Length: 359
Ligand SMILES: Nc1ncnc2c1ncn2[C@@H]1O[C@H](COP(=O)(O)OP(=O)(O)OP(=O)(O)O)[C@@H](O)[C@H]1O
Image (cartoon, rainbow, N blue to C red):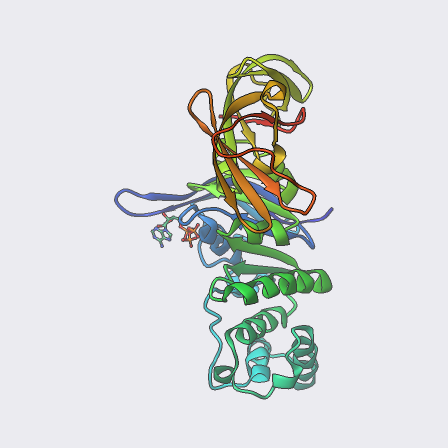
C-alpha cells in the first residue's frame, strides 16, 4: 500500500498565556485511496491537524510527508491537496458551473479543458440539470454537492473535508454520507474527513483515528475500534459501553482469563501490545450480552428498567455491587423478553467478547 500522508511526532503549540498544545506529537500514516477519518470531541485538535496538512498552519515541530517527500516547505497552493469547508464558501451570484470552473480558471487551465472538467464534475455529483442555476437558488444539500465538485475539479491527490455535513438535516446527512463514500470510491482520491459524529465515522471510513486532547488515542478500522477499544476514552466516546472491574488470573497470547466481581471467570481480549496483570477494567458492548436464568449468569442482578426503542429494547440491570449494566436486545417477532422489572436475572456473554482496557 502506498502511503499518501505520513506524520511523525507532529506538534502544534499556539502561542498564548498559557500556550495551547493543540497537537501533542502525532504519528500517522494515511494510505493512498483511503477514506480516513479524524474523530474526536470538540477542541481535540482535528481541525489543527487538517490545517497543518493543508499548509494553512506551520507545525511547531515534527515531519509531514506526502508520497514520501516533505511538504513542509510548500505553500498551500503548491500542495496537491484541496479542502471542503464546513461553510461551503460558494459564490452566490455565480452559477453551479461557474463556481466549479473558478478554481480551474485561477490555475490558468485552457478553456476547453475547463469546460470538459466542469461537465465531468457536474455529472459526478449529479448536478447536470442545475449547472446553469445560481448557487443562491439551490438547496443546502445541492450546495454541498457543488462545493465537493469544485474541490474535486483540480483532481487533487488528497481531499480534506472539515465537518462538511454538519449543516445538513438528518435525512440529507445520511444521503450525503453514502454519496461521499461513492465519490471517494469513484475518484480514488484519498479523503481525510473530520467529524465529531461517531456514527458518521463508523459508516463511511476505511480507518479512523480517534483523538482526544491533542493526541491520537487509537487508529483502526471501524469494526476494530468499536469491538476492541483500547482505552476507556475510546470505548466511551464511540457507542455505549459497560465497564466492569475484573482481575487477570492468567494470560495467553492475546487473551486473559479474568475473574469478575461476581467470582465467575471468563476470557477477555487484551489490548494490542499490552499484557495486563492484576486489577483491570473490561469494556463490553450492550448488544454483546444476553439475559439468562440467574444460575447461568456470569453476573447477576435485578432488572431495573426496560426501555422499548422500536428496533431494539434496552434492559438496565442493577448488579450486586450496585453498578448499572445495560443490555441491548434486537426486537423481532421471535425475540421474547422473559424478564420483568424487579426480576433477578443472569447476564452472560461469550468468551473473548469483553475487551481488557489499557487504563
Ligand atoms: N489560532 C489558534 N490560537 C490559539 N488556540 C487555538 C487556535 N486554533 C485552535 N486553538 C485551540 O487548539 C485546540 C484544538 O483546536 P481544533 O480547532 O484543532 O479542535 P477541533 O477538534 O477541530 O475542534 P472542533 O470540533 O470544535 O472544531 C483548542 O483548544 C483550540 O481552542
